[in-house]
Length: 293
Picture 1 (cartoon, rainbow, N blue to C red):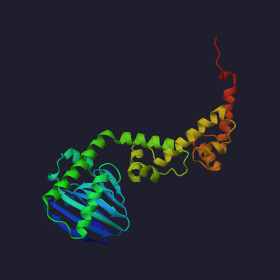
Picture 2: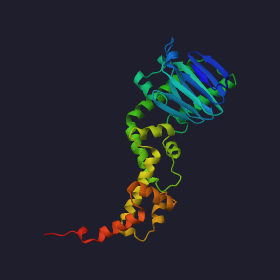
Picture 3: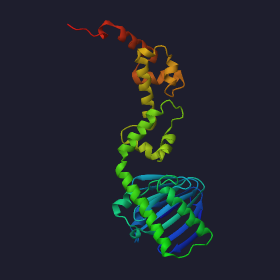
Picture 4: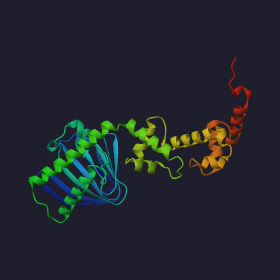
């Protein structure tokens, strides 16, 4: 395991049966578990990292989990991973043998590097339990207990099972569909950003961008495209001739008419006013009316 920009230290550590508990604090640290270090003998350990302070990012198996205080994620020491803490942080780590979980490899693989939020679903149960372990570690009140070990393994198994079922129900395609529906409903919101969308869907901005990149798009580009399409449809609608161009573009989060005119022309080849006039002439021309022979 390699660290860069290292400025961290272990606050507390304790082993209870098969479980290792530790708390680490620092500033701007990147931890890399590389393929070279993975090749060394590994007993097959899993770790849960719960963020206590600052932002933590877990990357493994092509996924990325962004953790805020109270959130946690699972990662596997037999696979390469990266932990990034871009600011002052404290993280609480629970380490244990993967063989102790009551779930299979497929379920474990599906649960790696996923953000488990402290205020949703099973995370609302497990996060307070982890906080209790941390408090007991800090106060030196933890005692070796088979019951404690069993509780840890049962709860982590429940998390992994829940994530496995969730990934089967919510694939990347379904998530992308959900994101696009959210964007469509929020086009009028001038504060619609990649960060806002990612936060609402409990994923990192980087992962959100990746979903769109797989479709040859960007998040910002998609938002702009949908806004312009909405404006174009309204400009062509003869029932909306009473609305100014500025009023139409502002309906969809484009507050600056001059900027709107520029990007509209870039997209469609003509300024919005000219496009509107063209649509009006088309609507009233004889060739646009239906006739029978």
